[in-house]
Picture 1: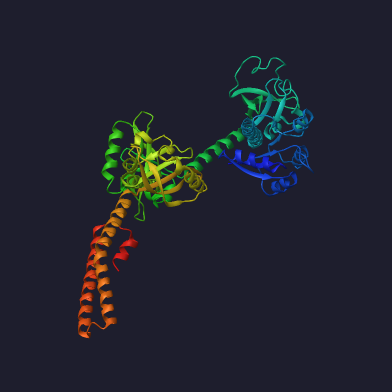
Picture 2: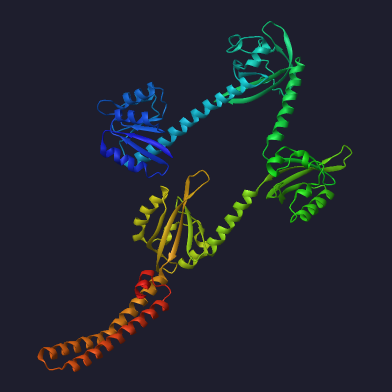
Length: 582
């Protein structure tokens, strides 16, 4: 993500520029209405690029640039102004501006040009940093090498650098040789007779004479290579004093020590077995991997450390490849540690031979891949779950190109995997649903998870299908968001069930309406009889009991109906089901 600071006293231009640049997802835009405020922002956090107007009150863009450069800040700086003057442009460039752009044409083209200049400024700055880092690495390398090293300009033969070892061998100080031609100073060759540049010879570990400051010469083993120092072609000459035998012996010892350290400290286990499968050597890493010290393994059959499930498999592979003198490549074996734990080792080996050509055994290396195998198993399980899911599980990159499409997606939307991989996900999104979706995608790109919101998608037959959609960001191994994963559940059956339930309830209400109204009418008649005194207490009791019996029958019918609805519709929402069970 590229951080850009926009500085302009015109709020409208500042906002328009910010909006346009933020269309590029690679850029993060910050703004400041004045140079003074921008300087305060820079103190808090650095930016990759600064884009500033020129004509601003209190402090102009050039003065702002001078203030930044005077502090040693080399952040790429672009003047983006509507007032183009040749003098201003020259001042900007002379004071360290990377680009000077004039807003005087089509705004779209201007912003395209600004975006391009921002990228170019960053690339230029990165290139400068890379060159400096390269030069610094070379300097450190030269100063750390035990052999003498001189760097010459390939065209002028002027000595550019000399490491301490070279100065020591030559008996000189840096000012005695750096900046001077090498002819007669380092080697006895005359000008225009350089063996490398003039005569086309190659120096690769060739014994030559190296001149010392006192005029004497010492034999050296010299090598010369052509390379580039920034944009400058140079010759790198390295040499070793052959008279210092002890130094050679020390370097040989150091080389052996490095090899021993490499073998002992490498995370993989190095081993040697003979033709009969006996362990002849194993590196100390055996204790970390298997819990055995090397002396506990040497002299034992290597197959004794293999899990019993894989013993015959390993013996057969060993015997077959040994007979054919073949290498062993990435053989996976379940191996038992000293504590009884089973781990998975991946081993590769090459044959080694006696001087007479007889194959003596194998030299090999083994690494622990237990966690890798577990990860592969988890990934395989997840892949199986996604493949078999009835829901549509889809992933897409940040350009909305579909990268995975499971069988659930094919069933819901009617498109096959082959039809959809690599296509734009907007293909199945109705136009009226795109606006809300963009808002949700912005949340996901920020790292948020969005769960269960209802929307519509377009099927292969042109029809719309209602879905419940969840979205999650996809991260790479560095934690960067590289795509979006979506899970969609088809709501068609749920909606059909809800409609059927509603129709069922409506029909039931209609059927119950008449009996309830009849009971109501009869109760009204009874009340009028009571008011008029036309009914005896016994008659009243009898009529009321009859209406109570009718009411109880209706309640009983409703309960039976509720039970039938509750058990007959498996997709009734839980809230409805609980209500029906009351």
